[in-house]
Every structure is written in structure tokens, then in C-alpha cells.
Image 1 (cartoon, helix red, strand yellow):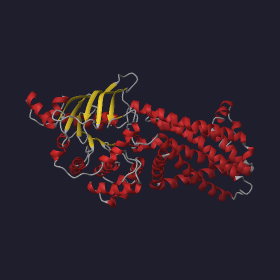
Image 2: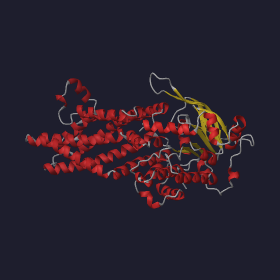
Image 3: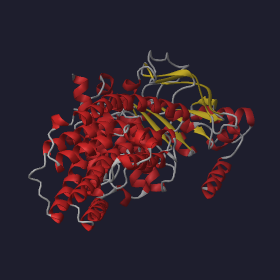
Image 4: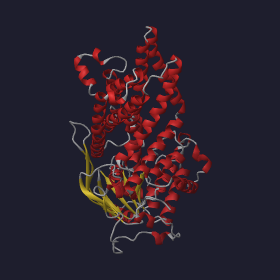
Length: 305
Length: 266
């Protein structure tokens, strides 16, 4: 159907019949032998930034190792500045690794950069578009970058956006005339258009109204159930993480401090700390702060800006 | 061969995107064209004021062809800066596109855009002053435009690096570089009026050779084969600067990825 896709992409982007949620869940490592090739493998990854000549370098990612299986939705939770977006940027080839290695479906992210780029796409917290251009024009640009035929891409865009609740008649007007929620849906459509087998979603629902947030979450659920795509999702929304992710990693000061299924994380916090088994308490326990603190900090940063 | 075909197709992404941007910003395009024509007319009228047709013609050529070179330069040099403003830089940089493909697409559109812009100016100014181009050697002018384009593409690629390396100041530095080229290239005067140290810089600017060649072709009707002394520096600059620009761009991208400078700011 599409040109310029790798054999892996052509195989895994075919729609398959919906399965019950339980059946589509990825088996946990201790209950089944792990598949030969993970979707994403990171080993001892570190990344530091020098923010000023006289200042000490900031360790944004500190010895992170993780393994994400094919078809899994893997959540990354963490406070502001914990390294979530840096991790996504490293996986997106937008940053180079200081140490460690990352593989996407067996391809080394630095040695086989172009192959990896064909397999991935990213939805960032801010819908990055040429705002004067229409959704069609922005999506045509994306399609051409990924070697797709523009006519086929247009038909596919209409189909994806219809599923996200955006009618075709809205797609010829400049994006700047669309609401933030609609822009984010177009960003999701752009990412899906190229049939990535690894989708990196960096806070895709942050700043959306409850209705738009719910629509995006439902769409991610549909993706999980009908496509063989692997998703890495960073979020501030505990309910969203619990609802969508099979496994969750808690990132604190660039380190993974906990990683498990939402149920096990909650059970662990309840058993070891006597807390009520909620994701909010999981977050508080492992990051040493509440989500409210985090949101307060975000607001004050915005005010300073 | 398949890779080349794929790269050529991918380069169309940048051509089509830039065309769409031009279309969406059509009001600004008209305003910019009017400003450029008015500027060129104003400068050329200095020649009319002193009653010197050769000076008028020389100023007119300077204004029109500097416009062409600067338009080509700007489109390429702002390849990164525009994406920073729009916030799309990371999206473009993570796409499976080789950098030379991106630069080729941007360059192709820049040249087409520059030619259309310059042709419009040339028509308006020729009609306004009622100039007789029957003795002009248009082939000479066309060849110098072509050769000058290659050299300016190379410089533009190097200038495009600046917004990659310097998140906020890069675009300003590009503008300063363009201004320096204007100053030393003899756009409105002979380079002999410049201080000696500036004349050295003049010989490093491709615009100096382009403008000299175009003036001799259009005003004096000199054929191409009599202007070899202006042609070879342009060939050397084109051959050296384009690969150097692509190489430098790749190095700058690596640096930006190491230091996190692709990240959206503002």
C-alpha cells in the first residue's frame, strides 16, 4: 500500500481483528519467555547536558536500562525535569547517547540511524506544525518525508482523522484556526500516517480538555487492540497511565526507580509503605513528591516564562 | 539508483512545503515584491537623476541581481531558522531523510523562487525606464546567474548551520553575513572605492564576479567566452563550497544532537 516502508513495517502495520483486552496484553517477563527481539532495548544509557560554562553538567539520564516488548504500551512517569522527554528524544535519534546503547527491533540507533528512523515516529507535547499550512499540507509534507505517495497519504489521513473525530472539511484550513486538542489529534494522525512500529508519545494529552483527552486515550486503546504497534508513552496523568499502559517505569532524576505493571506497583506501595494502592501514591512514594507539587512547579515555571 | 530516486522524491517534500508556505503567506510575498521593486527603482533613479544611462543600468542590475542572490541565500540559510520558529525542526530532523536531500530540495525551490521574483523585477524596471536590451547578451547574464547560484547555495548551507549552533543568535548572525556580502560585493559601486583590506574580501565573495559578469553581458553585450576571469572563480567556489556546506551541516547536526540544541525554544 505504501512505499518506502521496511519489510518489518509492512508486516506489522496490517490491521488485525480486535482481540479482548486481556489477550492483547503483553505477557510479563516472569510468566513467559521473552521474545527474541524486543521492540526497544536500552542498556546503561546516560546523557548529560552542559547548561553553562561555569556550571556543573546536568545528568539528564543516568544509567537507564529497559526492555520493551513488541506490541506493548510502556508508560514513563516522572516529575518535571526527571528526564522523560530526554529519554524520548534519545529514542527518536534527536539526541546522541553519551554512553550505553539503544536498539529498535534489533537496529542500533546510532549505527543504523536511517533504518531506525523509518520505524519510529513521535508525538510531542506541543503539536509542532507549520501553523499557516492546513492539516492536509502538513500531512503531505510528512508523507513525502517518509517516502509515501501523497495521494495515498491523503486518503489515509482522512481515514485516521475521521476516527479521531475530525471531518474532512476541516482539513484544508490553516492549522492555526484549529483548537489545541484538534491540533494534537492531527499530530497523532501524522505520526500514524507513516505506520511506525514504535510510536513515541511524549505527554500527548497534556493541556487537552477532558473530552479531547478521552478521545485520544480511546484512540490509543484502539491502536493497542487493532495494530501491532509498540508505544512508549510519557504522561503526567496517573489515570491515563493506569488505563493504557501494560507496564510503567517511574523516572526520578534521570534514573528508573521502579518498573512494573500498574497493579504490582500499587500492591508494592500498599504492602511496603502501608499506602492506599493508587498510582498517585506510587508516584509520591518513588519520586518523593506529589503530583500536585509537580503541577504547582509547572505553573510557576509558566509564570516565570 | 533506487536510493537516489527515493532521495529525489523526498526532496520534493521541501519543494512542496515551501511552495505551500509561499502560497499561504501570499500577502507578505506581494508586500516583499513591492518593496523589492520600489527599492530597486529608487536606487536606479539615482542614475536617472545624474542623467547617466550607464550608471542607471549598472545600479539597476546591481539591485535586481543582488535581490536574486540574496533571495536564494535567504531561503537556504533560513532552512533551519524557519523550522525553529515554527517548532517543526525536531520533526524534520527525525524523519528518514538525508541532509543533502533536504538541502537539495530547499535549494531547488530557492532558485525557482528567486528566478520568478527576479524576472518580475526585471520586467517592471525595464518597462519603467524604457531600456533597450537588444544589444544585451542575455546568455552571459543567464550563465552568471546559474554559476552564482551554486556559489551562493554553498555559502547559504554554511549560514544555515548558524541557527543550529546558536539557538537564538544564529538567525541574527546569518543576517549579518548577508549584509557583509552586500557591502563588499560591489552591488552599487565599483569595488575599487573600497579600502584595500575590503577589496581582498570582495574577491572572496561570489557576488562580485556575478555582478561584474552580468553587467558586462547586459550593458556591453560581452559574450561568455570573453569573461573567463569572472567564470573560473565562480566554478571553483561552487565546486568547493557546496560539498563543504553539506559536510559542515552534517557536523553541526551532530553537535546539535550532542548538546540538545535541536530542542524547540520559545
